[in-house]
Image (tube, rainbow, N blue to C red; front, top):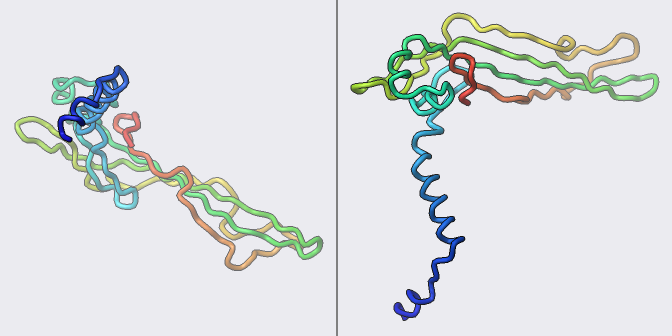
Length: 168
């Protein structure tokens, strides 16, 4: 039975190509996607390979420039709520967008050479830009806030940058 299984497996060009793509993906995966980040605290880790890839650095360039790298973060949240018009019984949905940006303090992880960067929280104060009306506000006249209609979502999510280039 085992012999029959061996002889029935043919090496087609497709199976060879699939095996090659799988090997390449497995070989490159450890060098990428080693970025973790908590946008609330500004903490996490950025692996050397992700920083090199984003900035187009080789190993020597990363080692030489590690002290001058600047990590920044940006997050976007959207809050919606509804207002009710008692004259015509229409409902209006309102939207407010908040974008928060901050500089993240990074410390190189070094083992004979730099292998990544610990992100130790926000360095100083964050800046927040708000676009839209005041929270839970409604136009004047017959418009009133609909109780319980407020919802906040992550919207555009959060992003992490090194020297202005997005890595997460």
